[in-house]
Image (cartoon, rainbow, N blue to C red; front, side, top):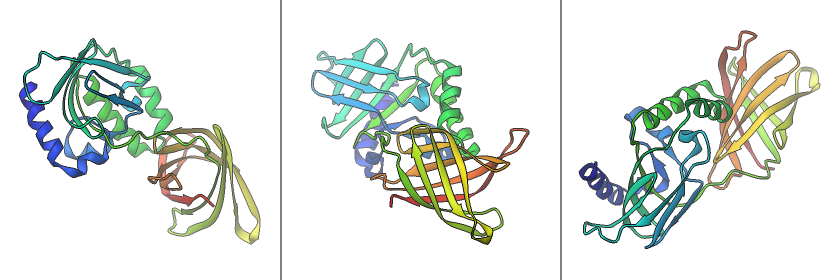
Amino acid sequence: MKRIGLVFLFNLVSTPCLWAQDYYVPIKKELEPMARLPLEAFQLDDAKLQYRLPQDITGRPLDIQLTRDTSNSGPGRVYKGPLATASCLGTDELPACVVQHKDLKINKDELLAFAHKKYQDPRLLAQITNVQQVFSTPNEPIGFIARRAIIKARNDLGVWDSAMTLPDGGKRSKVRVQLKGDSGLFRFTGAGKKEMAGELTSVFAHGVYISGLWSLQKEKGWFQWKLNSDKSAFEGSWGLITPQGERTVAGAWTGTMP
């Protein structure tokens, strides 16, 4: 692991595109976008390294606390603790670290519960469960840290002006969405200029994602949004949930803060 980790560290430092991400689970190429996850907490100095692993791959808040191993004579800085060993290059503000974890005691039921709460889109759910399996299956899962910023969820979900593409290729514009806590409403003008209103439930915000369920008259479905960098707009998708519980993808759902 040490040789592989050092090789990856040098690649990490010399590859600018990786700096935009915080935590990376090594995985096959097609799953890489879902394997690059933001850290929810991070602190590094000459004495210690502390961070919170992404809940997407732990199922619960899990803080890692490491102290500097001053006996290390190799390149960079080495930090050790009961749950991990990390080798870091770069600066405190822009580090590149390879981390070997141990004894994380990841619970698969907690993993699945969190994934189902955050990822309503069946395509994203399938991808993140594959990432979870890769991270949690080894006894000593490896990860890489390349930090630029801590990403927090929105506290003020508020009001959004949005538009939806429909299954028949049409578009439903001027859909006003109002969120408060884990619920909300969406309103639009339907056929005959009649205002229609639907309900949003199980709303969950985590990192750059907002997801939940919707109901309108006799139809039920899901929605999945991904916020932009300043969290003033989103791009996402929506779909139906059949009476049998099957999820279909119906179209796109985009929006901005008014």
